[in-house]
Length: 325
Image 1 (cartoon, rainbow, N blue to C red):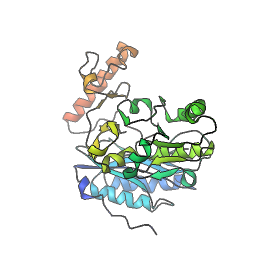
Image 2 (image 1 turned 30 degrees about the vertical axis):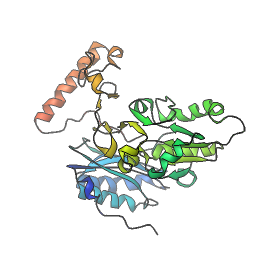
Image 3 (image 1 turned 60 degrees about the horizontal axis):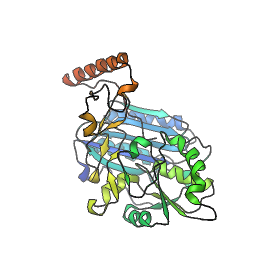
């Protein structure tokens, strides 16, 4: 029997806003029936964010008070197969979402590979305290399963960057690179990781379906690693992109230094923000030359409305981050 779970997040996360990133691969026979009770509970507790429901489980990030998040987590753990929910808490200085959404999807993280079963056929979990030893082994192939713009701001030492713009592209990348990566007649160890654990859990199930036997993934993802492994022992380099208004976090899950370009939705560094091509809410060096002046004028108007809303003490409903996929 699983150990009892605390009713509220640990006091160490007692920041002004509690953020919970969660997922669980589980079999939901009728995801639609789960939607409204979950949405009603979150709204009643003043929680905001996005949760995805699909036949394969639940995924998302939500934020609110410690007590409210505790009640939502307790409800989610009562859903079929969700007692052992994968959950990472962190804090934020202000609410990172504008509204609450519970969406029905075909997959909780989109890979488009049919009936993979990560709930029963994922790779071997490796806890953060054992991860360094695994990925430092020269016989281990280490693969970052995240999107290219995420890898660009931080990754583990020795990790291969597939340079994929979307998780949907990972299967094609692996099949194209398989012989080069694995070689002929070898059965190497493959270690994969992602932000919170969901993409690497699904990608290990995919590799096993492709006949790769020794597949490992970081339990709890980068977020759990940054939370639990001391910085002086860490093999992580840079910051970790997160899918909310914090944009990035570092060791100890402290808020990072990156901002977000609301024109192209890519992270921007302090150097990017010092560029003459950067205009808050309008453009950055990565996208300036791909947008027309008419588009930039539209972004300026949106930025103006957001500033007016902030001055009036209300949220302007503009871009809202989707859950990690």
